[in-house]
Amino acid sequence: MTTRGIDYASLSLKDALDLAVLIEEEAQERYEDFAAQMEQHRTPEAATFFRLMAQNEAKHGEELAARRSSLFGTEPKAVTREMIYDIEAPDFDAARAFMSPRQAMKAALASEVKAHAFFVAALPALKDAGVKALFEELRDEEVHHTNLVTAELAKLPPDSGLSDEDFVDEPAAQ
Amino acid sequence: MSATCEYQAKDYKSDLKPIWCPGCGDFSVVQGIYRALAAIGRPPHEIAFVSGIGCSSRIPGYTTAYGFNSVHGRSLPIAQGIKLANPDLLVLAAGGDGDGFSIGGGHIAHLIRRNMDITYIVMDNQIYGLTKGQLSPTSQKGRTTCTSRYGSLEEPVNPLLYVLAYGAGFVAQASPTDLAGMAATIEEAIRYPGFAFVNIQSPCVTYGEEAQQIKGLKAISENLTALGHNPADRLAAMDLAQHYGQKLHLGVFYRNPEPAPTYDGLVRERQALLSKDAPPAENILDLFIKK
Image (cartoon, rainbow over all chains, first blue to last red; front, top):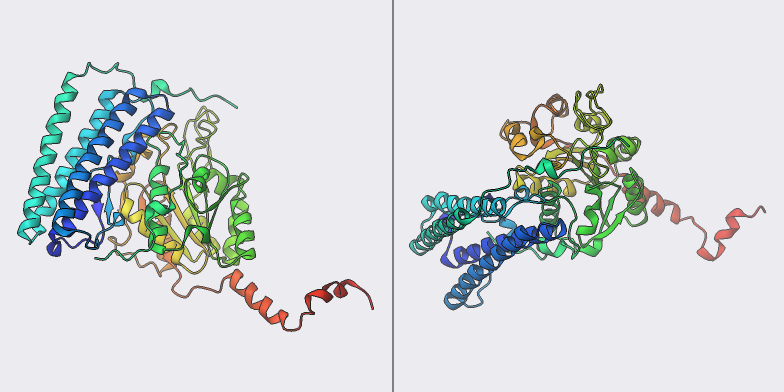
């Protein structure tokens, strides 16, 4: 989780909204990629969950984009996807073939915690009051999402106790 | 802060879905490549991406560049042929540690001595993953695999020392533990005017050992800039490179401050020189006729 070339002290509300949209977009794409990986590796339950997460991220992104549009219309963007790295997107190595729904949810939970940490860490550097308010709002949303995922996790039956290793073919001499 | 890039990372992402194991380090490597290419800003049709055989060698297909998933260990000769035939192309070569340092090991030395303007990205996972976990040239001594039941007796190849010793002008190492650093390192390698080598420690989630996964790699990571390393100092780079396998130094080990002329550039010059006295194309066969 990192950013490149973003000066938080001079971040305007327009830039901050664009940044928030990009963060959701990155997370949405990663969840879609994870869902595709799960489908490819015959892990349909985790795939369904990751698709759901992708839809959620898309919904949040659209809400933020609508806000940006109503406030700033079509003013050009000053932030790009190339400036953000895995803010709310789950880490690339969080996916595993045959992962259980519980493991998939834990990966999502870690991402929400990570996004929360990002907004918390960025807050002290912000100067603009509007940006600060937006980041506080986004930080609090991440807490809400974390609580939602935690509640869903609690409803799941315990895992089988099998590890990734149980699904890997034994090395065979060639 | 500006959004002046004509191309974005997504412009280099193909529609083909990677079939790597979920969690594979190569997912982040391809993202690093997309971002580096976006920063360079060359359109996909001006890029040729050649690979050998192996899990990581699937990578050209996941980009929108012209790609060639070629023959085991032969990405570098093919990349050189492409560069000579069309020097205006941005040529990338990629593959795994087995493809690069075992099957294709003999080719690296010749590419380095020619100093062709090609960037070579090795996704080093210390194992043959595609064929289900055999000992590779960079596997640690003592490693147990299906081809080393009682532990490997061999010392691993050190890819960094290997290319530094042959005189590569740009040598760097990256890892998915630092995505931003990896994208920046690949970008810098592509921008270097000559042969550039980037060794990427890319974990194999299926056959890799615990210590080689992201958590293990993070524990031994050290950023070369933070260490105060001077990338113009080749001997210091060789000294640091000796820690391969024990420490994960990230960043540029060596960048020749005075890059040597490239072979492709010299060939162009030679062609220009000889073309002055060359017979017209319609008389070219006269060269082969005794008078």
